[in-house]
Length: 271
Image (cartoon, rainbow, N blue to C red):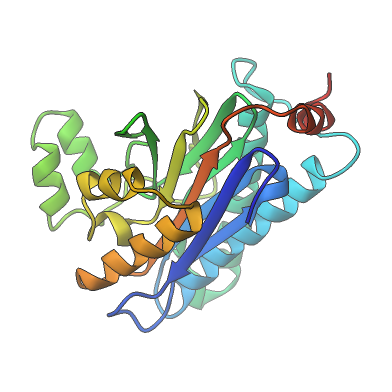
């Protein structure tokens, strides 16, 4: 799929071991919206939680960004309009999941990770909860832009273990924050500058468990498209064992900001 300024592609795959796919993905290239979610819970509740997260965020995005005039919720005055919009979308998804979990015993306690972005002409606003990640590939160097909300990452921050040990820890799947498990959620949000030819990689931990950062950089350094790179990453995760569902979305920024895109963004954000 191709947006006005970004080329965007994404795919989710159950992997080689799991019966169900509890990951979900949502792309609205025309609005610059990219969302990846990794659900958790008994029975099919993880699938329900991640699906509700995507559905809710896409619905709110269409309502608030898709009309003649964009809607910017009140919120933290230090946040950009795009950051406030993302926080609003994610907080509403949290409420929907939490209330459904409270209403139906089989779904009680279900939750999901989320990493969501609104891509603009000069910056990308990113909101996340949990351990689904966003990476930036720029000038041949890969950098992780999100920090996992997990027990092992807390241990890394406190100097108890190294990042290498965290990647192999049996406690790796214990999250300190998730969407839908509590009535309120603390959404981490940041805005990152975008340069021509930047490549943004969104993924669930089904990729990061199977493919190293160095391998990601190697793939993204080879000629290709977001679609071909996405397919390659899922193939690599499955070839390495495919122990979890794997979801990948990739957005590549255009080489220049076209007049048409400027016009589109004025439509989105006003003059």
